[in-house]
Image (cartoon, rainbow, N blue to C red):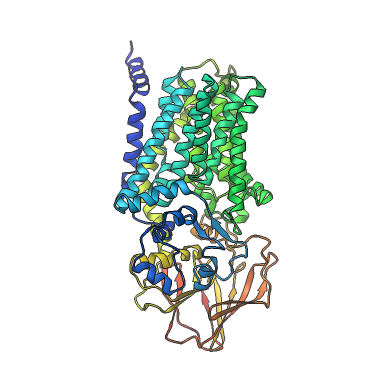
Length: 621
């Protein structure tokens, strides 16, 4: 036996070893160990305020009108923990305080129902020592369980080729897209939803192969657990549907009937979900597939290209949010062209192998529900299970010269080239990205945190903070909770006059008013550019209005002691020029004025212009 064959045999034996899934679970967990010291981020602050027993932080929040209803109460947390903005919970209070900006649309809400994920957070806070280190470790453990369950799925559905199962599991273990959802405590819901989805698929397979009625019931229960962990749990149906279409051994009618329990449960869940007022709507970051079907389909045509390309080519889907609206279609069409090439390279395998068809269908269908949100790598968790199963089958088939390889020489060589490109991307590149993820995540969090860092040297507690231009207005939702929990000065109120998406002209008509005018585009839109820029991400995150929510010129909007009057709009109904009138003189000592500096990437004191003067505030370019 040659040295090459010896090495090949050793690799095969390693991939097929009974302990390989355990090794891959440990590898995935080890790559995420730096998350243990990553602390709290964004929604973590909101949720921690609700999970903790009443303390001084809650008193500070109550003083500014942001009362936390029954903090630490399990029943309240189960129904409200993931309601970041809700009409019956805090929308009015957030608007009055200024944590939501004055231009927030009338239908805006982010109200999610995730009681199973909530229960794990409540247990962390009340039974397991309320330790941040443990909370992060809890996420890492769920990631390990996902890898173990993925190993069970791969080996169950590909029993004749355990090497393929092992290879797919290796790619899954070093996938960099796992890092952020594992690092973010509030994102544990996605990990839970995926774990229960895999359990549901395994039990569904047992039902269809062994006709075990108990397995059918338990599979449906696992689907329910996935739905109660996160809305993304609806992607579990992608696995069930693909199984019925490609793997189920029964006749067509029985295959169709096998889908009915899942369909019925999802419909009932969605009806109850909507009946009790849950859902995300009113902005451009989320699209509700049921409530906004047309807008969702339009968005999905672009978003799915970035998500599928992220899974297949390791192109970060997050790039979508760094692209200006006008430049998004060229990128999307380019990615669709690359995906068509990938499909034709896989076509011989898909024609030959029904398991490969299962992976392909499951991957594509699992992408659909996550198109409801702006594309991010963390939203590829479901699709990655199927995607790496297909990629592993493709690579293994090429390396072992499987019978499905095309006969045409040119096509065959293109298939070989594709396999080696995938090996490089999902082996070397993924390993490099995974190694760099702690640094990348830390860098992004520092940038995001800077947009809501209001601990200024000249700022005093209980002053009203007036922000001329905020780069990421959405981050202000977290400010009062973060300030209260970390015992930092808490503004009495926040007034965000405009986003910092472009250059502004600020003039002062009298001692109580400021007029702001966008020098490029509108106040709520970024100037057209083909560059990838952070400002576009901030705009997507801070999209508080739907396209139909046109502002009305001349109609004042009253927020506390501030009245905003839109004086001119663009054709889309976005404000170009606004008049901000305060109930007291601008120089009153109870107000602190700041502006965002794109060059320094932080807030700076703003010097009020004299009456009749005009100043220019620079944009990101």
